[in-house]
Image (cartoon, rainbow, N blue to C red; front, side, top):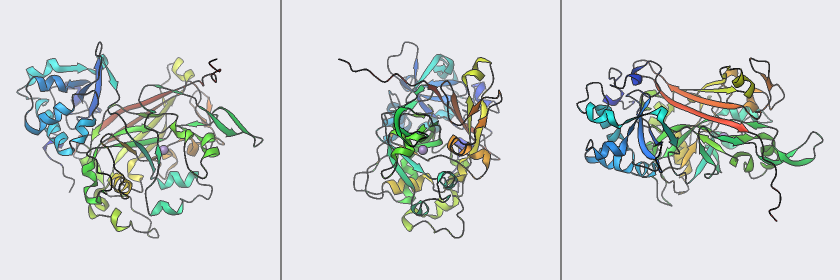
Length: 439
Ligand code: MN
């Protein structure tokens, strides 16, 4: 039912020793795709992560290590972005992933050809994996929606459709950058609208899905086919300025509070690699309506969800200077999401809207029912009114300049090799001075 195959066999090991460590994010069973540069590279190159190394896909292709569909995929994955690989559809990426598993295995006959093509991650700089054409952010955790709703209830449409807003593609950036505190309009304590640096900067711990093969304008996608249009997944931080959001969101929804920046992790964990970690879709309370037929399928009910542990940690400037480790502030799981990614994708295309290879569809904040699973500060601190205390005594209602937020994700299941997503990091930088007129 899960569709697992030899690529998920937990008995398999790699000749790259770091891939076989118990806590490795990138064992032989994962093989996520990304774009990297070595020092001196002008443009990004396609690679696959194995342990603490990256296999250079273009070099491997030039060395004649691929044939057939796997070779077609390797050519498309050369870089400088992965959109062409995604456009080929998941069969091609799966063929490449299966071949890469054989090439990197402990008893690989090609080991001596492969070893010189491995680049240590410490000598590479990761790049944006795709040119993002479109970015849509959903709202699929009922727990997040309830905690932030004045009525304590989800909006009426939440239970019949995955709700979303169109966000900004141009400000999606790779993990590791600085997020500059944005200016915007917000109400001060006297209820007067001001313009200035946000006083309520927040993170949202989310999973992003990359669209693989797209659909033509006017042509919806059946729920049974939706998974074949999802290439893979990343960690995503939907940075949010809550005071700006509050001032601008009625009646047209989020705008500048969200488009300030969005961070994604560099490695794209494929749909195929995530198969062992499928779980039944969220079990709805009996009083909730069943999904409408176009969003319902037996397969989605049986394994539309993921058992994926998600963590957010925070390290302040003072903690960093004192060599304190980051403090975990969110521990949640993707299985709490009310809607599945296939349902999001089918709903997105249900009016004929065309989805493009490399488009990002994000889950929305992944909060669960428990306190520790609250996946943004607005929930943790009750909108800043009940601040969080860090181990060194600092308090946080919202993010301060110099704070760094770090996301990690791990998929685990008895009988399978755990896989990880790497990291998604972002450091809050101070607001810039408002620009003076140029003349
Ligand atoms: Mn969001």
